Length: 294
Image (cartoon, rainbow, N blue to C red; front, side, top):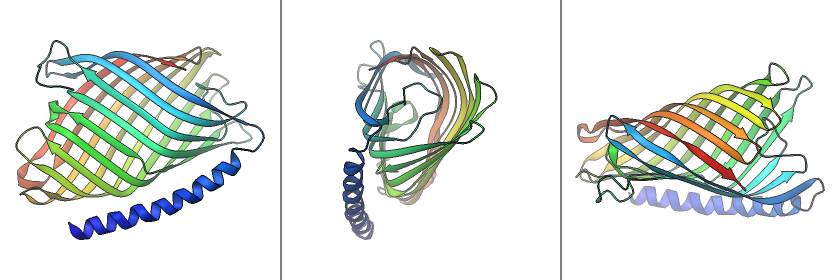
């Protein structure tokens, strides 16, 4: 554990140097012509629950980011030019007034990325290729229905690649793959299992689907995807362990007037731990609602 702490501390110091270089370069870029900055705020509500576990509650969704956008980039577009995002935060929280009063907050899923930069290249045939680089992405999660008291995962860096292929002026096929590498993960349990601490080796997420532009104020997207990570470490009192979180989902989204979004998502997710025959705990989740973008 001391060796891991030393390696992790050294990695953070190295990343701080890289951040300084990124901040210096982007501060110069902020002054270039053709871009503007704006705050992006997302607030929403709906329903969230685990199917078959008698656990449905009120969903609260919040998000925030400080964006540097090209002048002709608008929220809700199928494609858009280069943008730089600072302090990107998104969080889902489920509150069940009629559930177990001792459960507190039964479900939450928070993502935070200090800096990420994306660029889309539009080809001659209209197709778009997207690349994104994320620095120090962080995820915090809790779901007592799968015995997950708290999970914290920090990665040094993440990359994402995407492709949008237009079938017509209104129809496009979309696909993307994201990878994050190296970091730290902690996962504790509601039951008496202690906690897992270890190195985050990497994670991968992929999704594909279609987008249909009904008109300039109505965009519909249907996607199918999945994600998984690999972590090596140890459980308190349980020796060496392999830990993994995984998920598979199908989602339907509708963007209205560039500031309203309707969403419906069905996910099967779980967490696995090889130590002491813990195995995997999983659940099917249904989530849906509406958000407003400011």
